Amino acid sequence: MEQQLFDYTKQDAAGACSTAHAWAKVPAPLTTSERHALAERAAALLKKHNAVLVAHYYVDGPLQDLALATGGIVSDSLEMARFGRDHAAQTLVVAGVRFMGETAKILSPEKRVLMPDLDATCSLDLGCPADDFARFCDAHPDRQVVVYANTSAAVKARADWMVTSSCALEIVSDLHAKGQKILWAPDRHLGRYIQEQTGADMLMWNGACIVHDEFRGLELEILREQHPGALVLVHPESPKSVVEQADVVGSTSALIKAVVEGNAPAYIVATDNGILHRMRQLAPGKVLIEAPTAGNSATCKSCAHCPWMAMNGLANLVDCLESGQPEIHVDEATRVKAQHCINRMLDFTAARKAQTSGMTPGIGAA
Ligand code: SF4
Image (cartoon, rainbow, N blue to C red; front, top):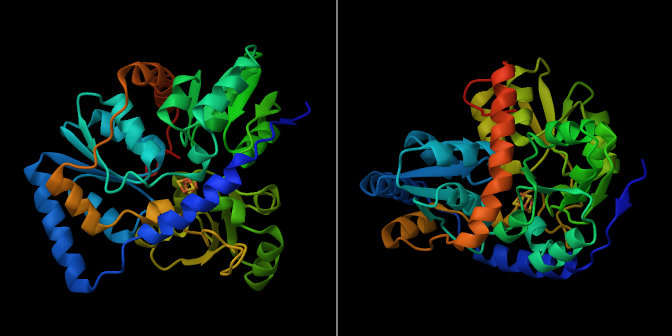
């Protein structure tokens, strides 16, 4: 079935501008003693405020370590959503990007949701404004609207389904098997990959992740020749020329699982390099090689590390715990509508999980 593209051009301007803003706000590196002092202070504040730290694999290593040491979680966005919803803490502190904080608030309106910096956003979210997206949906009322987690609450409020990279394939396959046509947003690479795998009729929004979009197929070929025994692990937000060379294509959790369980001595990893911290902890002794990007030059906006994820640090985490700001708010009408598509995904994945086994302990759903 022919894939159609919805041409959307605003993302480059908005994304480039916001990338520069994000890099300017990335916290300065800490000395070892500063890091220890701030981590200790943050741990005490988490306890004092009955708060739990919910961190993504792409944030800085010390934040990941703090989350695990204080009873929080480091995971992909699906597990972050589930963990925050089910945890007894009254305050969730989300170390990640804004849509993750919004998702936590949508699922737990009675809880306080804090983030170190609300300017931490995502090129996929920026590239899919709610009004434009609503017009796109209105023009195609015969399609099930499936949106990626990396969207605003307002975009989710317009959707029938939310998916993450760890469940998108299964949910779209299921919809396709039921004869549904799909309107997909916003990541064009992930959408293309799922369309190829499922054969579903998918009408695509034309967004991209600035980190994964920069991985390069030609340079990857050269790197593979230099490391002939290495397995290639690729996140499906990457371009087709990169995905085609993968031994494993999957979500962050699936890529970690591949390293932990794999027999190869070396792995070329095509996703945000923040993930290497957790991979090294869970698979010590294995050689991890970053996949090549557009290059450490003017042509490279992220160089394999998300500037918005990098805005999270120990100092602004302590500040937000001390001041109770910034806090995530989602207006109630939007929240109720957005909750519907997220709950559908959580119910679907919980049902599938009950039917299958094979999880790797400690790394979340694959
Ligand atoms: S890594 Fe990409 S998808 Fe993830 S938050 Fe950053 S820009 Fe968005």
